[in-house]
Image (cartoon, rainbow, N blue to C red; front, side):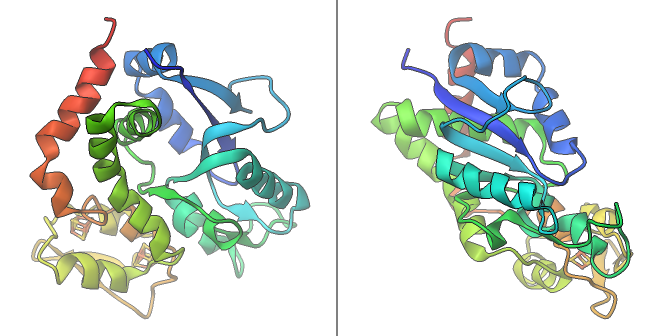
Length: 256
Ligand code: SF4
Ligand code: SF4
């Protein structure tokens, strides 16, 4: 088996829900840690004080720009990691932390939060609030296969990761209109209601099984977009879904 990749979790301003989602992989996580990944940095789980060199940094939460240590930490992460992943809606779009601007403060001195892509280049987004355990596990395994796998595995991994990279290229803002244009108008909405449930200002209501968005209320936090299971839909994945999932399952079975 090829050498493990080095990965870590960088905790900015978030609720730790994404890290809980990582841990919710249970024995799958142990398998990943046994065979594929050295988890070299994680302030919540390990006593490592300085950000080390990493292949992949999973960043949870947005950056409080009133706190210079947070800004330095995210800049340091970019320097030390070959690949930076925005783990979850707050890192990717600001999500609920955007709501802290203009009146709702966690702490009086912490008023302004930015998604990490407004400060550093980000390679890949894992959307969701929180992303599912499977999504995170799949990205970890696919990152390993992309960096260390054979040619076929590299092709599958690139296919799986491409739409997540495109999300990162798309930028750090998302609003209810994006849900309307990119998902509902494209015929992709399956009426699950996740967007309405995630909206912090109740700008979305479900009408006749589909989201109805009140643009006047929308604060452009991106929660609905990052929570929608269709927001990173890609037909390339659907066409090759079985081979991609077989690659993940196969990787997780090696050495069992
Ligand atoms: S509709 Fe709601 S969840 Fe979506 S971006 Fe606007 S405020 Fe955020
Ligand atoms: S989360 Fe996405 S798929 Fe679900 S109802 Fe909203 S727009 Fe439709």
